[in-house]
Amino acid sequence: MDPIPAASAAPRGSGTPTPLLLSEDDAVELLAYLVTSARTQLDEAAEYAPLRLLTAADRLAEAMGPQAGTGLRPLLDGIRAGIGVTSVRAGDPDGYVAGIDALCRLLATHLATRWETGAAT
Image 1 (cartoon, rainbow, N blue to C red):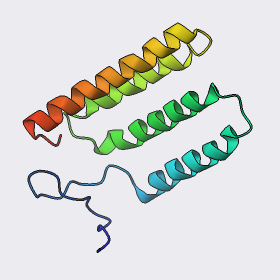
Image 2: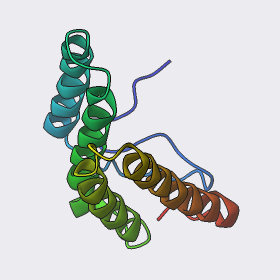
Image 3: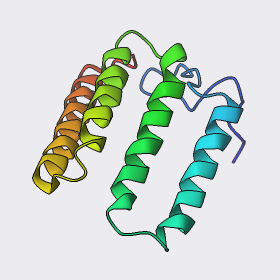
């Protein structure tokens, strides 16, 4: 299998390559965060795992923002805002679960619309 060129991602739907939304440095930073978080999680309380995943999602959304299409920006903004609100509710288990559920619904709605219309925005 040929490597994907640095300037584009695998084609989706239309056959036209989709530009990458992350620089190589941003992708490596996120990768390092995820791997080291996995190691750190072995020694931390279990409730930190979702916080670390939310932090990674926030970093990814932030890094994607400057290159994101207009249809994707509202999702990224909503995810980042929702993560900020949800993260401070970690001491409130019901509120924390509700916040993560809301983030999942936001993402699911975006994905359903995106794939239904075939729009890669």
